[in-house]
Image (cartoon, rainbow, N blue to C red):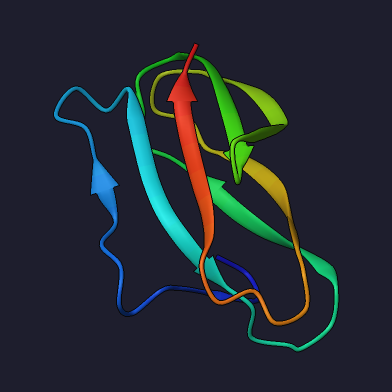
Length: 87
């Protein structure tokens, strides 16, 4: 993660088959912005990225490759729920 951080109080959840990852993102800057998250180590395929249940990106990832996703972050976010789901 480029600019912000994972919530210290809430767990990062990784489904056993890596088809779903959930975590909460906390704002570290105090202003609205986007942060970059690098996805890697996932099986090849298309992945939906959701913030608070709303799709913010769809990425194709090749086996063994990384993909960068830009996530919108609102000033003061204490626990923005992020989900990465294999489509």
